Amino acid sequence: DFFDLLPRVLCTHVLRFMEMHSLATCASVSKRWRHRTTTQSVDDLWQAEFLRLHSDSTFLNNFRLWRNYSWREICLMQGRSREGWMHSSVSKQVFQGHRDRVRHVRIRRDIIVSSSWDRSL
Image (cartoon, rainbow, N blue to C red; front, side, top):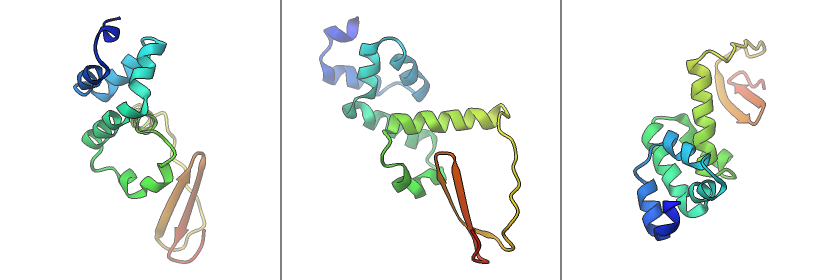
């Protein structure tokens, strides 16, 4: 394993040149590589990659909802979500109830809560 021969700082520097997909692939090589790509010191790599790919994401407006996740987890969730939309593995759901425009939407795991200007939830 050539990463064992390199200082940790140099390993991190090499990882900085990888895209999100490549980082995820590295994490699946072995337990050692997974640890190298998921430690707190490498989490800023995932953050930088997320911001590069999704700078226009509304996710950043609701970051406090996700603060218990590492940037790696956030990147992978975003990637799975994007793949779902790209390959139509999602289905459209229509919910009745609001008589006016939706004002806020909160998503927590499998729960979606929306509020409307008509004061309904």
